[in-house]
Each structure stands twice: as structure tokens, then as C-alpha cells.
Length: 337
Image 1 (spheres, one colour):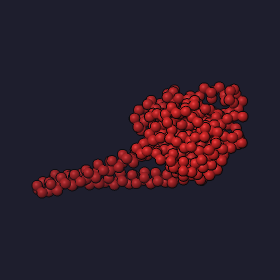
Image 2 (cartoon, rainbow, N blue to C red):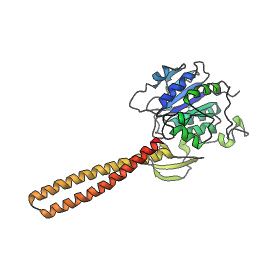
Image 3 (cartoon, one colour):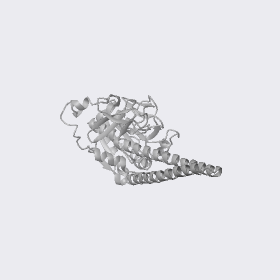
Image 4 (cartoon, rainbow, N blue to C red):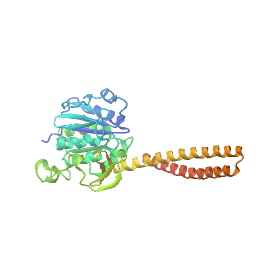
């Protein structure tokens, strides 16, 4: 019987609630190791291991670099470092951000698929945008099992919904049901639906093409240059087409899915419009001061020129503010969806 003994879980906004619901359903004698990546700020120490341990039956600890992997334990990524898996041990690293995050869900999922292949179970919970979808696809390609929180059960449904849109998922259920499903899979009492990549050709049921699939994201530069620049380092981005999923990666290693790129461009646009608005406000005030100064000196022609400049800047400011309001409104509508 095939062992499924490595569970990797990714979560973002709304994920704490989902994890608190899921983890109590995992028994202390579970013959599998569980790894959790939660998007978090690097400036604040994470209390997530303590929060989950309050209700979890399993031992919950913060991940440590080079530490051996033991079944029956839940390892939680620490702020500011990627959590990746190798054969029999975990690694922490300060590598490039992926989808603007470190730790990134994609890093954990991708390295788990590389190291443990069909032994891996990937779970994607509540969160915004689509970090983890590319990694979940890797797990599927490697013959592992995929599961997502039902979007209707998630506080923020974007991540699980993005996975459902991009690929065939083996299990989709509420967070309250996922723990029992994982327990059944690990103990061999629940078979995942057959993967379209897991039958008929060679070792472990995977094709030679899949066994030779790229495992290092640093090797993707055979793809076409995208013509876009990296939002973080401003270097060139290469485009990677992976089925329905489009991704981008720069030479340094910063990586983005399409949704993340669009979101970052939107944020950059709003930030640029805000800066331009502030500059125009200062320009208006400066011109008005110079107009008053000219009037006091009796130089009417100079005062008129400054007055006209202030009026021109005021018109430009009105157009910018209208555009900025439209951008913010579109962002709010998308976040609600």
C-alpha cells in the first residue's frame, strides 16, 4: 500500500481560523509529519505554534533548519524564512520572495513534491490571491494527493478557488471535515481520484516526462522573456506557462503568479497616483504662495502667471483623484469577490 506520510498545508488571510478547526482532527499518533506555511510579517515573532497547540492533539513546534522530520509532529514555518523539505529533514532559508511572501506556500509545496513525490498530501486553505496553486500543481504532477478548503467555507476564498480553477483537485471540503479526510488518506482508508498524470507509464505511475520535470525554479529561463519587470528588483521577468497557470520569475528568483503580478501592478499604480497627487497639492500651494508674494510686490503679471499655474495643477489634481478613486474602488470590488 502506498504511504502518504507528508502533509503540507498553506494558508493566508483567514487561515488561522481554518487551521484551528482542522488541526484538532489530526490525532497524536498520525503516522505522518505535517508542515504549515502561513503568510506572516517578518517583523513579529509568530505565535501560531502556541495558538495551534492549544487545541491540537499533535505536537506543534516551530520549524528548525536541518532538523530531522518525525511523524506525529506538526512543524510551523517561522517569519521571514522559506520552509522547504529535503529527504528526511527540513530547511529554512532567506531566499527570494515568491508571490511577495517569505515564507511562501509554493516553496514548501514544490520542495515536498520533489523530495517525497506521491507520498505528499497538499492542502490549501483560506487566503487571498493564489500563492500555493503552482506548488499544489507540482504535487499533483508528482502523484501526490491534493485538497482545498471549500471556498464557501473560507473567510477569504481566493486561494482555494484559484486552485479549483487551475486543476482537478482530489478533495474539496470544509475545514471541519479536512482533518478527518487527511487522517483517512494517511491510514490508507481513502483513495484519491486518479490523477490524469498518474497512470500507465513507468516508476511510481508517472511518465518519463513527469519524472524529468523541472524541480528547481532557477532553471526556468528557457521560457520566453515576458517583457515585464520584476516589482521587487526591477530585473527582467521570464514567463512560465504551466497548463492553465501563468507565472513569472526573475533571475534573482522572485516569483509571481499572474494574479499576484496584477495585484502588485495595481498597488504600484495606486501608490504612483497618490505620490503624483501629493506633488500636485504641493505645487498648487507653492504657486498660491508665489502669487500672493507677487501681489504684495505689485507685480501683477507675475501673480497672474502663478495663478494660471495653480489652476492648471488643480485641474490635473482633480483628474488624478478621480482616477485614483476608480482604482481603489476596483480593488475593493475584487477583494470582496
